[in-house]
Length: 268
Image (cartoon, rainbow, N blue to C red; front, side):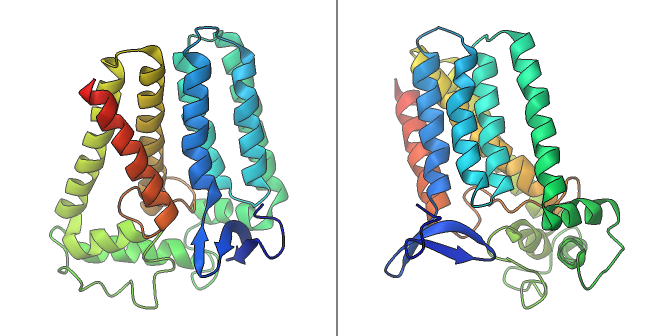
């Protein structure tokens, strides 16, 4: 639907949103949870099969049409963890994993802006006002925060310097305002959420709940790792939100919805 003119909205060079009047929502955020739910149901039947990968491939293909490599990576990795936990044949899993990795390399190669991001990752000092501008502004924000930060609301990078300061780059703003100690505290809280989700999966009352909890915990954990790793120049920049922190209704609604389900499973 995002590709249909008049229904899908084109923003920042991609068609990832559907507009209903003045409301914009991102269907790929709903697809994340939908796929986790579907895979959990499939795997609760205890019939480990290579066919588990079909819905994963289909959803990934549709999201790449938008295009959105970051969200595709989150979905593929989350689904792969769920499938791995279903005791699928390791040779099949490894073979498809290699194919998936080669597919990502191919998608990077055929897309100029993805190639530029990868090259910028290896040469961050090149083209400081062009291709490497974003990552350099992120690192300036991180460095400016020091140990205890410049104070809440006192970030300078978020004003005209740091692209996507309220969404993808929010961690750099947090680190600048509350410093290394505050950023470490945020990482601890997000890590604790993932730990609790995996613990709920361990003690879940049935297989469906177990795979569902595992999927939700993996989803949040992978997004946290990819977002913060890209903000600290450990991986190339990826446009994915930081769970619970980044501005964006679709992402926050679905993560809160999934958290409610986690709490329900925990009560059981």
